[in-house]
Image (cartoon, rainbow, N blue to C red):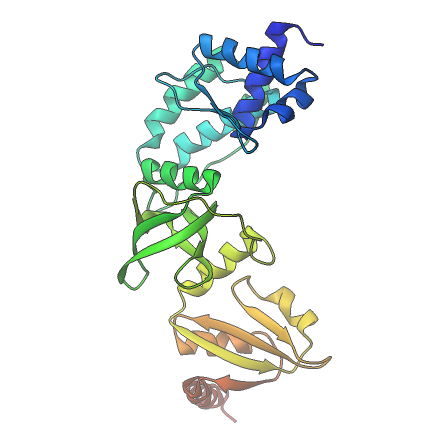
Length: 318
């Protein structure tokens, strides 16, 4: 059995790694009785850690919010990850106003880092080149509210401005935050539309308090990364078109970016769903695939292909 001081550190680490624990779960992790867990929780409370307890079969323990930030327990890898993340945040500026706070937190962390870990952090920083983007940064207070709702599985209502400027109030079950090409995105189940949606965090304003808790859902097929990459790319298309390609999907798909969907038809053809900012751009892009194709929709794309074909024939001469 662990000594009391070592056990308290282990218990604190468990509370900081996961929000909710039952007494039997903690007792099993630490190899003690539930009575010992109750006593250790009281010791943590006497040290200033706000551990709350809920009685009953469905009850348990939770490390709550206190008046001051208590000491955090980090493994070596966690400490390196935090330090590297703070340096990247200070340089990249993906969150509004976070640069100064990141530098301050990094100075405090590096002061207590062991030499072996400081060497790893410095090596990572030395050979990493952060590139700032011109994208709209996210408000850290908004990110905090959204991340907490994801963690606690609490419904979220927010005012949202879509890419075309339309304003609406959305009610969602938030699941994940994703960072892509200089922007933060929320992946959530849209309650009103009964489907998965991606929202830009810099375009939403949460309405607090958050709503009731919800049961977690199975995430979109292909995972969060693929869903966000495909959704954010397609959202900016002004024109969408459907084309039958005279080539197998397995040969075409590797040439296409994630937002473009390819549906196999048979061993010789497939259907491509894509889009672009202009019909001319779409026509040229399809031609670059170097396969025969038929336009299914829209008819305007076929018109542009005829105009481009005539232009190319004139340019080629005799």
